[in-house]
Amino acid sequence: MSSNVLSGVLTLLHTACGAGVLAMPFAFKPFGLMPGLITLTFCGICSLCGLLLQTRIAKYVPKSENASFAKLTQLINPSLSIVFDFAIAVKCFGVGVSYLIIVGDLVPQIVQSIFYHNDDSTGGLQEHHRLLDRRLYITLVMMFVIAPLCFKRSLNSLRYASMIAIISVAYLSGLIIYHFLNRHQLERGQVYFMVPHRDSSSHSPLTTLPIFVFAYTCHHNMFSVINEQTDKTFRILRRIPIFAISFAYILYLIIGGAGYMTFGENIVGNILTLYPNSISTTIGRLAMLLLVMLAFPLQCHPCRSSIKNIFIFIEDFRKGRLHDNRTGFIPLDDFNSEEPHDELSQQSSEGPTLRSESQRHTNVITLCVLVFSYILAISITSLAKVLAIVGATGSTSISFILPGLFGYKLIGSEFTNRNERVPVSIKIFKYLGLSLFIWGLVIMIASLSATVFLGTSSH
Image 1 (cartoon, rainbow, N blue to C red):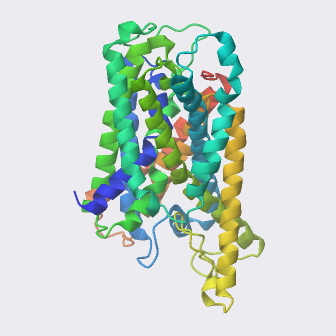
Image 2 (cartoon, helix red, strand yellow):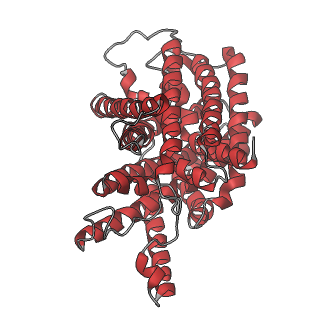
Image 3 (cartoon, one colour):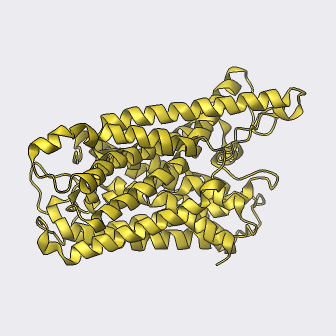
């Protein structure tokens, strides 16, 4: 595996293996073990299809430009770009909020384990209750760790952080296996190998299905990975999603299956909160804390770019410049590029001033994303609820609907002559895109309706 391919695999794996790792065992709860494993496998295959479609459609972007959802939208219908950018922004923003919720879940437990482990008196804990307040640690981590990383202009500076994050997930897998082998020491609920018996208090599988979809979502960084590759042939590019999804599947198989079998019906949205305080558990919590802190910028950067695209779209629409994707249309910002794309900034003598203004806009958007993420994170405590909503909306859009739509509309479009024979492989990918698009719409409507009207666990 070349260094470029390895770097791409690590980036996608780091993006995918975030909050979904902790919630994966909970996703099994309304399914049961075997149906949960089948669903996990099927969602992984669908996500892989979406990534493979992205590797096929990237070639339709002019070679002089970087591939992005925004650029592809210009090829089929520029007026749809605001819808897609909104979906991407919502997904990335929601994931960022879930990371901060995890910080609020884990840091107080880490502090309690290290400093108050031997303090058995209720009065002792009450005396230090302010030091165990989740809001305090969300604030500190946001100010001194996450914010400085998010204001960086490029994702390249986080390349080595991906390796650290993957090691953290590997350690968590070992911790879950250890507790699974020693599960007799834990408070275990009923484990169902098939679909659990339901009563009025049970949740529909549709309420946690989005968590399976969410867990594999790394598609918003796929084009960034493609743009960084030296060899952009499909034969090489396809290795990146295949390796990334395969590794993610193995991790989720271990974490989800073993975690659910450890606690059964007692499982909650963040499995690490269930383990008793110990050195190994504290290390696991520290590892996951490191993972989400380093992964937050991977969500903030594309969220920021999508919001910039939305503002540019609105400005172009207001000035009447959004009328044709071939003539008179000023391109939207590249999805993962923080460099200004405004044609005026390239031609005007005031270029440095406009670039400075663009950087100020970028900083303002970043600050707004961080502030609103912080407000929601200190107000919401349910990790599973956030992941279910984000998975049902943003994740399905980015993983299935967008790649499927672009694949169906663009793949094979070069064959304009009806008498020209279209290769079978082209037809397969084209209609794979259509199937994925329809499947994404079904999942979005059904899962979002179930999450909103039937609800999910608050823990």
